Image 1 (cartoon, helix red, strand yellow):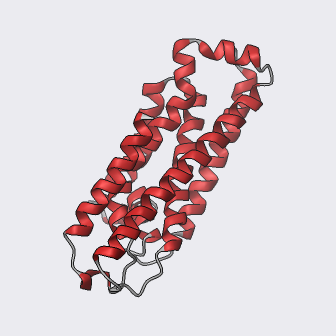
Image 2: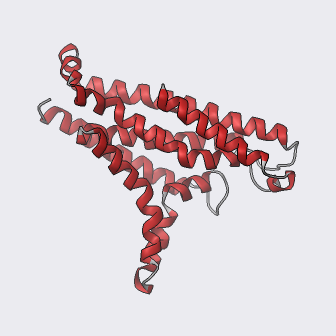
Image 3: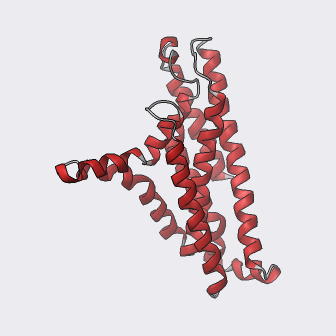
Length: 225
């Protein structure tokens, strides 16, 4: 509840701060949900943390033994955690982003020509998948601090690494490609703040998440509790 509550506060609070500091003309070519983009950049860390803690906290306290005793088919436990977490995070994300879009549209009356409801679902789906990836990482590493650190590295390194790759002309193109698929740039594309639809970035995240979840299922049966 703390992480979800903080997520809502960050997304809605930061979003409305940006919405109040903009003019009607700023929304001529962008959707009303754009202020939520800035909140999601920070808010996704809450979902990442929650995704890890959904399963790693049980390993930390030893309660996972009780869970697996009550449900010997371990894959059912992991499946239930993934489904519940994904549905809850998707609904909370959509409500938060949608609220920002709704309130922004009321502040800046009919000044946008861009459809904004689609960005509510796409951006929420993206950060929810990021949370599922964190859950899978928590299951793989079985350590809260390690999994959260790994996920923060996955989010932050692609946004920072291109700065160093740009130093050399031979690696500059690689840096540009890494930056294009970083989490902030992917969200920016989903909010129509950058060229492109964000679809390739979304499918890359979906593929990485699917691989991580598959590895989590395999290791769950092969390792002792």
